[in-house]
Length: 167
Image (tube, rainbow, N blue to C red; front, side):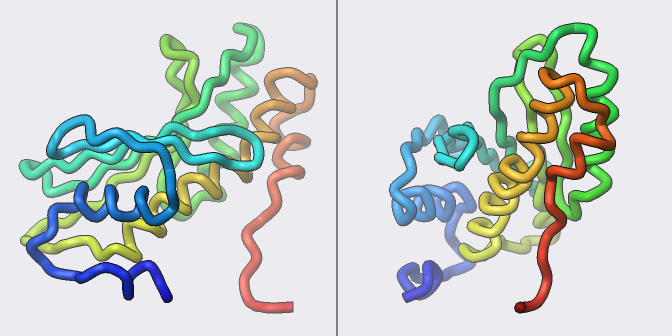
């Protein structure tokens, strides 16, 4: 049974209620921080990713922030920023940045739902999955730039391109 078949879909559902259902379905640890915000921990191959989704009724935007710790040496910041740019060129949705003060790598995405639109359960599940997949894909490259003295171009070779179709 698909995730959406388990859940009664209605336009009256709050986006964060949908996220909470997804977190329960996947058995992720989560905390409903406020009516309009939820935080969860999603286990990946490389890291446990902290994911926060927040709804802004004013902007009509569902904002996703996926973070993981990363505290590279100061002299590695310029090549890391270059690696971030290269990674962002390969991301169709969302983008990476580094929050230096918090020592966090961040993947952000905002789903605009203006004009009374609503996000489906499958759409939100895909947002979360895309954030984790992008983080998993580029984490090794960011590490190689930060700690193994590899150039951003060399490090990006380890980040495999997404596959399309079937073999």
